[in-house]
Length: 424
Image (cartoon, rainbow, N blue to C red; front, side):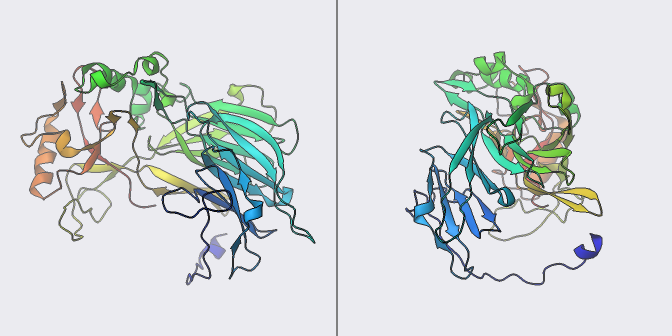
């Protein structure tokens, strides 16, 4: 409630720390993705951490001052890259998400019983496996653990020299505690709009179809790319990659964060039958650009490489907010979404959305890339930013927020846009 929210935490102190292995109960090293995600069972006092090496490691927190890794309770998932872990403590269920080994095929959520205390500790038991869309990057049950949602990121990959880029989607599951779970794959496809419609709404598309044509046929790296298969099967949802999700308090909606596209999709979940895609209504909202000029809401940003921090306003410079994680909170029966705005970009083989500014615009204001032009407004802003000392190597996007690809043979740089909102 609003009354409770008026009194916040006074202090945080670290009580204990435990290092988690990346292997099957053992193996400690940096850079191994040992604790990609973690979940805590507040009833049994165990936590579960998933490793990118394909293991789930269990930590006993019955004495929170001395947490201990329980080697004998580790789960081996055979080398799959695990993406997330979550728990329904009251139902004694553990969920582990993983992608396919080729990264672009459908992933899975594996369901286990949780570790149970007693005279003898009862280890996890594998119960069932549920197919999801490609790369279930986040899995989350709703508040009463009657439904499970998986945000299927569907990252593209270059396989045998060709770009394979599946569509982003949401997988919803009911009756996951039975041998006959009810599953619905809510596919975005073109339901949220065409490229042109999404761009007009302010949604950022890192590689829309006409941009794909430019880089594949007209750019200086065209001979190094093969986007033919991706272009032939293209849909806007290839750009819409779910990163994170949150349930509304009443479980009627799922809010899905599309980090690279700088937007949030809302899926309305029917309480009745799940007969078809049309039972689920979809809406997309762009998060907008963060304006770092004097006309914007910020105190400025440091774009000067000089080993000091000096915030300045830079005319014509903005960034995509690009939330990484989000949290839905309910205050006085109103849902609010808190979004941690980090920033991210797409890369496919020799194509990278993220450019150093000097690799995109020359000192004289002309474009460096084949066939591209620079708008007069960008030319003026580039000059002003240079005069203020902005680093030439600042990273900017070549996606739809910055470049107009209406003519794929002659795109126009229309804005100088960086990555990440640097805030909540």
